[in-house]
Length: 406
Ligand code: HEC
Ligand code: HEC
Ligand code: HEC
Ligand code: HEC
Ligand code: HEC
Image 1: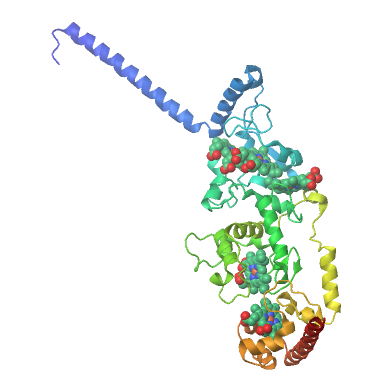
Image 2: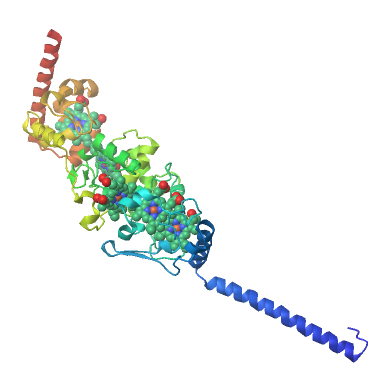
């Protein structure tokens, strides 16, 4: 630089020094701010925001009552430590019904029956109660298997009812209810399980048949236990169940589980229901009505007794009634999967071009699978079945004649 004299040069150097010092101070402040910001936990910022929102909505006095610092709900009986309220601070505040999340007050009705001091948050919502940053708390973290059962997960699974997933958790406690308010999707699935006679083949809640696997703790199975080779597109336990419900043979070609023709939404409901069937280790006071048995209705008991003691007892004891009615012997199928056997003598002849004797000794199709794996019958038992079916056929023919005569 071209300074005219020493004095000018000195002035320049001083100016330069001042400039450099100011610049470095500004730089330090910015760095400091970044570091402090980095070290300030996410939740502290939410708490500051919450205080401002309260101030704006409810005034300075109320804002002064906001409690800061880590907040948690500890429920010893459930083994739950939930810090969600560290951010979700407005849970039980009045006047915060319409503010932004995470500050909005909680829908009231559900908490009236399940106070948060006794239930925490995660038994319903899922997520990682102990965590204090949002990603981890909402459970989208490595090694955490119970993410928040909320919108994000519902979108991930492409489920039509975005609020349905949480009902899986509701059902860990409400599993023995026939139906429960606020659990429409699970209620629907429970209805289907009854109507379609799934218990004919599966043990559910400790009772039912053993043709298929016991489903009482189906929800304990892990994703690795399913075979996804035949799944088209995104493979998860949820999509496995949906595909299987729509057409079991698509995934398990040799299965005898029938295709019930379920709609997508029914298949989704059933998938959520079977995935909700977990062991759960709940103290009895958390089971609604202290009822933890699935009690068959009076009609169901009476019907089974009647069939067991009636002329069709053989077909009930040998569990043919799982799939077949034998109408002339008073046997009513649990799930109408095979034809009414009262007409078998005639029907086998016309459908298979063989005698009934021949068919039962060397069956084909579904009955080949049934008699070789599920219900092995000895030669004597097969002969007994044939004789009984002849008798049933006589009765059926007589029934028909009397109808015609009238
Ligand atoms: C660090 C702060 C923070 C913590 C801790 C936190 N949340 Fe959130 N939560 C948020 C914010 C912010 C939103 C709104 C933005 C969003 O939806 O992603 C939110 C949204 C939600 C929603 C509505 C969104 C949905 O997917 O349905 C639910 C439910 C929820 N949180 C439950 C919980 C539960 C349960 C816990 C404790 C296990 C928890 N949160 C812990 C910050 C937090
Ligand atoms: C008994 C079960 C239950 C408990 C316990 C519970 N919630 Fe909820 N929560 C619900 C239900 C049901 C809804 C309404 C769901 C809906 O309409 O999507 C809800 C809604 C919410 C929402 C709003 C979701 C949205 O879509 O905007 C948030 C956030 C939330 N809960 C957080 C919590 C937190 C935090 C706790 C613990 C302090 C808690 N909940 C305890 C059942 C529960
Ligand atoms: C940790 C166990 C548990 C979970 C999870 C749970 N509940 Fe409950 N729920 C109970 C208990 C226990 C009662 C009975 C309370 C009482 O008798 O006052 C109850 C009562 C109810 C009632 C009132 C029933 C009646 O007959 O009065 C409804 C409705 C209900 N729950 C729905 C839900 C929904 C919806 C969810 C999921 C969002 C849910 N519950 C999650 C344990 C649970
Ligand atoms: C005729 C007997 C039969 C009926 C009725 C039946 N299933 Fe099955 N189910 C089976 C058999 C056998 C399997 C094992 C082979 C397979 O996966 O398809 C099975 C498998 C399953 C599985 C997969 C279990 C696993 O972990 O691999 C589920 C879930 C299931 N059934 C649910 C149901 C439901 C719900 C119903 C009623 C809507 C039903 N089943 C009706 C015979 C039956
Ligand atoms: C898991 C369901 C299932 C069970 C259990 C079952 N069946 Fe069948 N059965 C069928 C189906 C389905 C058919 C129809 C033939 C086919 O599609 O291959 C059938 C056909 C038959 C037929 C031919 C009937 C006709 O009208 O064509 C006879 C006879 C028969 N079964 C006898 C029995 C006997 C006896 C038992 C008990 C030991 C039994 N079945 C148990 C599913 C079952």
